[in-house]
Image (cartoon, rainbow, N blue to C red; front, side):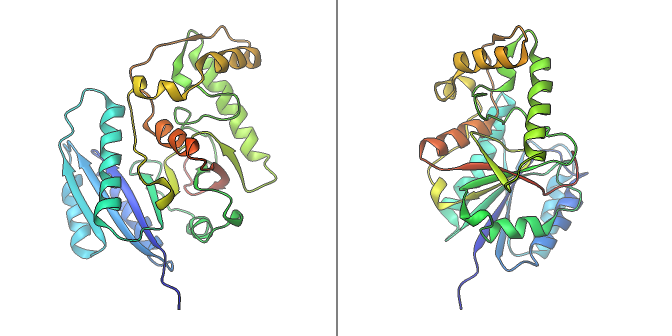
Length: 273
């Protein structure tokens, strides 16, 4: 009899007390699947009762790990990157034989009931194993445009000035149409997240999260992306020098440098848009 695959569920929590009961219910539903799950909660500068809720849940579930960190950093994306890296440190340094890790936002996009069948299908190598990491569509709006890089859009969406919001609305509409008209189950992109991402753990060993633009910009193609975006949108865009960048971009692009394939599924995990 084959051993069950081990999956680490990774949550970065900052004042998410309102949403945690729904998140816990989703974890309980996942635990009914034929996998060994461990849930990792990293709390960071909490001002509500999130820690108390996690500790209460942990007391009833032996497969829960909780660490509280004091992440005194000025930039939000840098703080989030450090917290996500704390999850990775536990996976690679304290746990054995994790097959998949799943990064999950513990907020409004994940407190409603998950589609457990979709998650189960991908953990069982749906799509003929044709991905190394995968994120998911949303039923109304594909909201996480900051993490999204695809096709010739190889610069992050807040990296343009002037008509920035018009550009964001354009790619939101275009990418949503791309997903809604897919004949295959998923599409390869350079980067994405949208609140829920599954990663093949051993293949991503050594890759970290990074939230400061200066440390990520060498992986981007701002000038080429600007030319393409201007041509497609007809907006008077110009490049803008940011301090912060979505932490998932570095993680996904470093994986791409390694030859790993990152995809977005046309299916939904969460019912929220």
